[in-house]
Structures are given as structure tokens and as C-alpha cells.
Amino acid sequence: MSNSQMTPRRILIFGSAMHIWSDLVFALLIPLLPAIKDSLGLTYAEVGLLRSTHSGATAVLQVPAGFLAEYFGEFWMLVTGNLWASAGLIGMGISNGFWLLFVFAIIGGLGGGTQHPLASSMVSRAYNDSGRSAAVGTVNFSGDLGKMIAPALGGTLLIIFGWGGTMFYIGAAGIFLMLVTAAFNRNLNMGRPKPNVTTLSSGDVLGESTQNQAFISLSFIGALDNATRTGVLVFLPFILVGHGMGTGEISTALFLLFSGGAAGKYVCGWLDGKIGTVNIIWITKGMTAVFVVLSLYTPYLLIWPLVLVMGVGLNGTSSALYATVAKFVPTSRRGRYYGFFYTTNEIGTIGAPLLYGFVADAFGLVRSTYVMGLVTFAILPLSLRLRKYLSNDVL
Image (cartoon, rainbow, N blue to C red; front, top):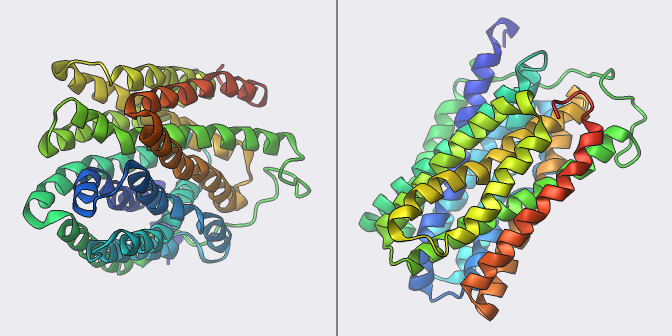
């Protein structure tokens, strides 16, 4: 591999392409959930468990992937992870019962463990000198392009092939695309990170240094942010069913939600360097807390702009959080720290659908949505703790 071939822009394009496919694979389940629920006769709790399992399994290998990337680099692990996740999707597609679907959701989910920490690490390394927040925001935004494609593609294929066939064919396409990508490794492989001992002292231990205290606070906020995002994604389709929407309308609404989310990620990545992380959190999560409750009562004609704007707040926060991780950790260890960050975030991904599913089964979907709004609002005061760690940030 020639280092002259490794331009930041090329790395950004590769990381973004991997993120598009990974998020498409994991978002594909969402528009299929109502059909799966009806086909297999599932409860809301089982629907939540299925989503939690598929997304939550990504947490298992995120930290090991971060450590391994320090020795092997990110390229091969990103390609292998997407191959793995696509193969899991094929397994889910051929499942004829809940428990087999559950097992393949775990298997496929494990493959997603490489994507978020390693793409963020790779891009933050490529843009270490300048433009890091915008670059990380861009690779984060690219994932929402996959999320935008998923409901439209999934909704269309669902009508033709059913939910099983949809998963099977998308998974097969993923395997083909990753094999093609592997053939271009000489032009895209950045190699492993170079040792760097100047960013943080070598004696820093997680939980003891100021930087790591900040990292822990940021990770806790990230977990709550993920809880909100996952909870809304899982249960919004059922709220829309309550508005009398069918499969096509729900897919369109999810497309608008992801479109707003994509715009939010891109804009918030850019704004992070302008107005500061804490201000981004207050704007985006305050907006989300209000809109998630309003979605219960909004008239049919107004639900469309509401979900579009709600998507901005729902997903925009993450770009600021992901870029802020790099402010607290050394360049050579970003893979592992991003692994830690995304793994702790998965606590929210796993827990939220289960919690909100049980509340919905016991007390109804409306009360579950109110709980979701309260948890989202709790992020605002918690984020104020970050101010003392971001003395050089725009506050």
C-alpha cells in the first residue's frame, strides 16, 4: 500500500460507504416489524426483544474490535463485519419461527460490532489535524442514508417477497458488495494506527484522569441518547398504525424520519464546532422530547412534517457526541475508546425496547410514549456536567 494513495477524502468515502450499508442492514428490520409481528403472532415485548437482540448484539464485539484494529487496522475488520451482518440477515430471512429468528438476530448483530467504532476511529485519524468534527459528522450522517433507503427498499420488497425474502435478498447483495470492496483494499486500506503518546499521558487509567471522567460522562449521555433513538424507531410504527396508516404510509413516514435524521447528523456535526456540544444536546434532545409525545396527538396531515423535524433532533445529537470522544482520548487508542463508547451506548439500545415494550404491554402504548419523553428530557440537565470538561469548546 502506498501512503500517497491515502487521502483523508478517500478514507471518508470508504468509511461512509461502509456505514451506509451497515445501517441499511440494521434499519431494514424496523419497517418489517409489523409484518413479522402479524406473521409470527408476537407480543410487543417480543417485538422489542427482537429489535434489542439484533442491535444490541453489536455491543459484544465493539471493544475487541477496537483493540484488534490497533494491530490490523480498520479496513479488513469493517469489510468482514459487514459480510458477517449480511450473512446473519440471510439467516433471519429463512427463519420460520420466533426463536430461530431470535438466534440469527444475535448472530447477525455480532457482525455489526466493527462498524461504528472503527469507522469513527479511521475517519478521526484521517482528519486529526483539522475538520474532525465535520468529518465525523459526515460519516455519521452517511449511516442515515442507509436508514433512509431501508424503509423504502424494505417496504417495496415486502410487498413482492414478504419479510423473509426481503431479508434474504438484501443479505445476499451485502455479501456480494463486500467481496467487491475487498478487491480494492490497496486503495482504501489505511493500515494500523501509529503509536502516539503525546495526546494523553501513558499513566491515564479509565476513571482516574480528568479526560476519562469526561469520557464516562459522555458515554452515559450517549446511552440515554441511544435509548431514545431506539425506542422511537421501534414504537413509532405502532403509533402510526394508531393513526390509521398502512404499510406504505408507515414506510414513507420512516423515510421522512430518517431523512430528517440524516440532515440533523450532518448539520450538527458542522455546528458542533460553532456552538458547542452542550448546546447541540439541548436543542436536539429538547426538540425530541416534545415531538415524541406530540406524535400521539398530531392530526394525519401534520404527522408528516412532525416526523421529519423529529428526525433532526432524534439523530442529530450523535454527531456532536461522536466527535467529542476524540477530544478526550489519544489518537493511537481511539479504536478501543470508540469501542468502549459505542458499547456503553448499546445499554440504551438493548434496554429501551424491552422497557418500553413491557410498559406498553402493561399500561398501553400511550403511557409508554410518555415515559420515553421523560427519559429523553432527563438528558438535558445531565449534559451540563460536560461543560467543565470542554473549556476550549464553544459554550
